[in-house]
Image 1: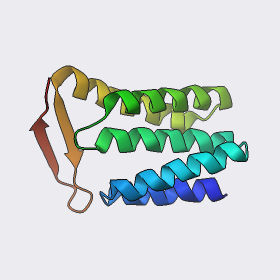
Image 2 (image 1 turned 135 degrees about the horizontal axis):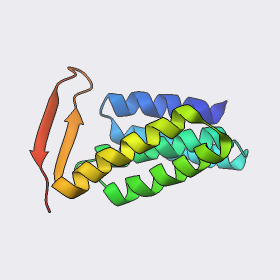
Image 3 (image 1 turned 180 degrees about the horizontal axis):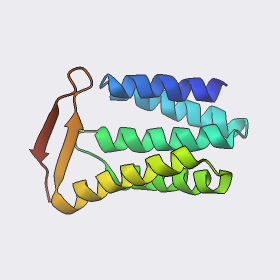
Image 4 (image 1 turned 90 degrees about the vertical axis):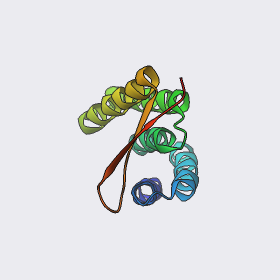
Length: 120
């Protein structure tokens, strides 16, 4: 259960825009999940790490892609259908960032969106 709590708290911090706290919880949660062989929670934690890397400014698409793909592979092996749906969405966002050089962010407080020109 401890690993799952780290994921939930990390998700909350991510939605609040507190990426440093989200990253610290996700990294610690991944260590806990792997130490206790909690593969399902490990997969969700990897997806969270992908989300965090995708939301950094500037985004870290290569790191995010690696963790999304690792989460997806684990989700497929375990038959975790909801997670199998989340990972391709994140990968699609990363492809958009990479191909078009744009970043997209949703404000966690207002729900508003901002678009910006990235570097290519």
